[in-house]
Image (tube, rainbow, N blue to C red; front, side):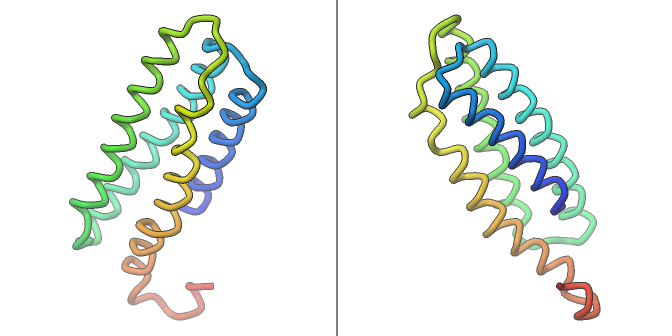
Length: 124
């Protein structure tokens, strides 16, 4: 999961650079599509892990995943409609915070649950 999280951050940072440089919608949409694709794959793996481990907070965790994917779908649609205009930076402001908070809170709780019976040496 940590490797996936690192890749998500790399994808997000690439998107943020394009947005901050005032790139037009087509370039931003390409980076956004890569982020969404990676995010969907990560969420599928994470949800399978929660199912396999019997994670008690799975329903709320899955709901967070769906909320983000729905919000990003709206962003992608609005960006697509902007055609060759620079993308509105404010529309994407929440995305970095959401990823950071989700990884540091919800995903950390999941990792602690999964590792609960592992030897302490695995928790470093």
